[in-house]
Amino acid sequence: MMGLTRYQWTVLFAAWLGWGFDIFDGLLFNYVAPNCVPTLLGLQIGSPEAKSATLLWTGIMTATLLIGWAVGGVVFGLVADRIGRTRTLLITMLLYGLGTAACAFAPNIWVLLAFRIVAALGIGGEWAAGASMVAEAVPEHKRVEAGALLYTSAPMGLFLATFVNFQVAGNWFADDPAVSWRYVFLFGLLPAVIAFIVRLFVHEPERWQTARASGPPPRLRELFAPGTRHLTLSGFLMAVITLLAWWSCNAFIPVVSTGLAQTEAATLGLDASATRALAEHWKTLATTYFNLGGLIGTLLTIPAAKLLGRRPMFGLYLALSAVALLGTFGPDWQGQTRLYGYFAIGLTVFGVFGSFTYYLPELFPTRLRGTGSGFCYNIGRIVAAAGPFLVGSIAAQGVQSAVQVLFWVGLVPVVGLMMLPWVVETRGRPLLD
Image 1 (tube, one colour):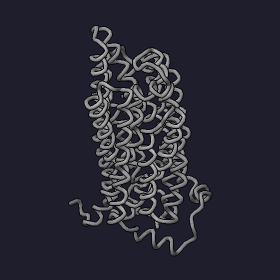
Image 2 (cartoon, rainbow, N blue to C red):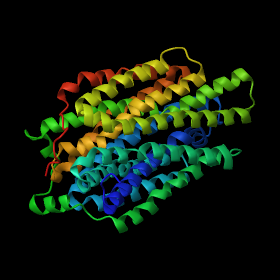
Image 3 (cartoon, rainbow, N blue to C red):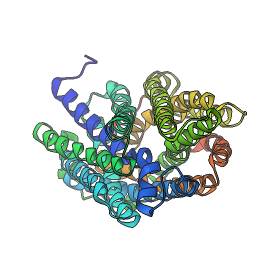
Image 4 (cartoon, rainbow, N blue to C red):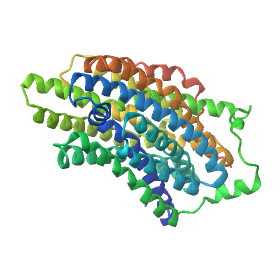
């Protein structure tokens, strides 16, 4: 199938699991925030004070996650080039799995924040190791397909997070929201188990072994050398724009959908139990639309990249991202209608990320591949962290404020379109050794 050997499929599947659980662990907080934050702050769940605090702390937690993610991405990108892709994959999966599970035992909001930082370091480090491993293991002519398939694990991770939260918080412990979020975090242990299985079946790519034996260890400053600087700039610009848009939108899907559901429930005169049920349903609905759009959009990067080239593909996705965001949050839609708009946002804002798993490894030679890919994909999260923080601060005033600020996020992809002249085209170019 697809011209890959059994071992190449094993490598792809191992990296697929690593990235999928990466997203799964990274976003569990967003699902449990409406119950978790009030509980740790001693507020009544569902009260106006709880809603305001949840929006604010969702922004703070997401911004902190992104900064930790950025640091982990840069550090473990270097580690992947020095000690190997497979070893780094194991270390990072253990780190984010154990860090997420520890959140279940947080006695207060500050300890939760500390555990999220630990998990963020592992989450950031996993991507560069997995993407480099896949790019170096598969045939040249299948790199785009393999890279896009690798990223399909992101919507799968989101689907899994949605399912776990719905089952635990919406069914098993629906009558005890102050405790249900702790059990949701415990599912973060799953990647730790998978990590040991991966280590048994996957070895280091031959490309990396050869490069390690024939050259000095990589250094971060090499990314800014005259012959490499333009490659780093190309990857960084596209990553930072798309990350800013993605995190500003996705981090607030559960919170916004919960707020819209509560407004709808008040209009219908529903009691507290029915309001919680509607909120969980709308949260699942919005996330499902976003994930489904993201899955389709990810797969569509394959024909877009191969037929149009990398630069035109980025231009197309950025333009459509702006249309999707402005169209969803601009008009005065009814609450449930806005939820449908998340499909278009997922198709574009989410879908474009399917290209980074093959585009960034294409930019750099083998000895710098993990370092360069990790830096470009992750350092932009420090800039992107401002998005969720600002959105959360403004959205703390209410769900309508959140909708208004998300409308203005639609201008971020427009800025990205202005940066296209600096994007390096890599279509048809073999992987650099």
